[in-house]
Image (tube, rainbow, N blue to C red):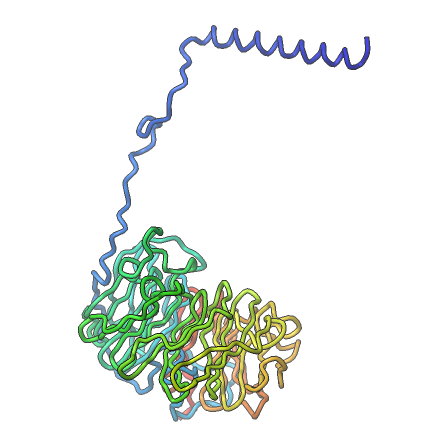
Length: 485
């Protein structure tokens, strides 16, 4: 018998044995039944349908009275002038001893990267309480860190690299916040009274998508803007941008979104271009400019889809001369955009486009323009310059004029930096704070100190008077960087 014939016999015998065994099993176990799986018949507890209704700002807790109103303010993302530079004249220390700058207070927060705003002796931070499943606007005393009040509401969603990401915008009369799921609150900055709310998903969501799906996958990172008592927000759904009267909560104007641009993680930046005030926004799908003044306020003045990275976090930076820079994450790099005006309309053109390894770049923190120089900590995908503090001339964002060197890197390049005059404060990922003095196109290190054992210290800092407020993913710390009296 050949080997092929033997294999056929073996296989045939195995089939016969299997069939015989199967027939014996079904005849010996007559009670066995195949039952359709029906809800409620598999011994699981009844499944409750979860409602997605959210009552924004529903709850309020009064906790303490303010102890003292200290001078100094940091009213919004990137400060009063949107440039991340403090103009306060409070004298600040030029050096620190071995104990470092004094820590005045520290508070625990839910996991996130939402930075603080400061006004009239009060610190405002948007926080997510994981136990209560609550989005909270918390108000603290700048002097003591005592929590004064909190305005909150229940909204449940899953952790995705933390929760809260945005910074409130505050004036003497209003505080406006945008939560992780694009819920907007406007409250009184002193007593926390709720003035109005908006659910951007419900009001501006895209029909036929889950929950409107205008909020980015990593949740809302757009910081609201209050400009002349008007809240300026970019839903990126049914409306590209809106202006809301803070006194009434009524929408004063809407910019149509004919090109279906989407909400990004960037924030709206006011700029003067060709003598016209505009709101510049780097959306997902393109970059746009909306009139910020006059009879045509809210009108789309120009747009370009030439620059459209998949993720963008850093906000646009004005260069003057009717130009600005935009940035993309995950190696997308940056580009220069020039706006021209022909007497009747505006046009946007992209130039100097480069990857992160080929010029100024930012994964998260928006670069600072000081004089004619741009300062940034380059991301991990920036090649040999990764993690370094780097300076570029605004006329050439491809070739750096100075860098801190390969021996002086600052983690993943995700930590924040802020300026006061010529003093630059830089916080690395792990909680070490560095003090530099900018001298032309160089930064001279004056001091450094480990402020805390931080995890992902990526939140933008706030500088109010002599107090610098910083945080990592779980803790917010206020330190005194003023000159000793």
